[in-house]
Amino acid sequence: MGKQFAAMLPEHEEFIRRQHLFFVGSAPLSEEGHVNVSPKGHDSFRILSENRVAYLDMTGSGNETSAHIHENGRVTVMFCAFEGPPNILRLYGTGTVVLPGSSEWESLYPLFTPLPGARQIITIDVHKVQTSCGYSIPFMTYEDERETLQRWSVQKGEEGLKQYRQEKNSASIDGLPTPLGEMNG
Image (cartoon, rainbow, N blue to C red; front, top):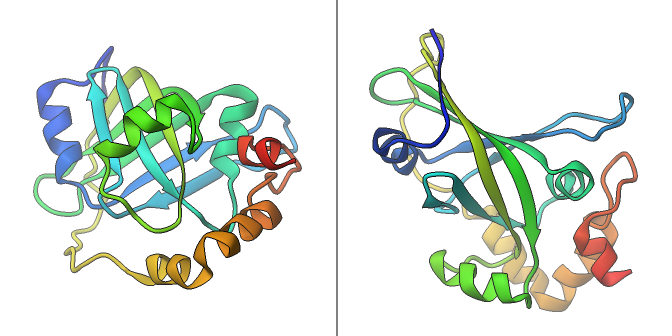
């Protein structure tokens, strides 16, 4: 059965640090809006305190999480054990989008390994941690990170990435603005 906690315990933090993959879920307020779940990889997740986390977000084909957080703040992060004992861990919280050039970016970005195509940092104030069994999650072996997105970002270059973000990352699929879109609008 699932257990709930007001903050991450040391064993939760240790579990998170061992994972190579996490999922981010968000949704707009509109009933007609699309719920979004995004897989994230690379060494892009950081624990800032027992109730605060952040991840370095890369340029991608959409920017749904950013738009949803900008609209209503709600976000959930999920980790699954694909190796070792079964476990699922969810972090429920309120997110903030941190853009390059801001003072918060300058303090957070050095915590991450620089990756080409980094577009924003998502911080999350965690108000609930939940663990559950994970008995149905299959075993999968980690092989390596894909370098496709990094190669694509390098090939695009800074100007190409800026143009791509303006075209593809300024609004959600439901038309909600993102902080990137407002900054460039």
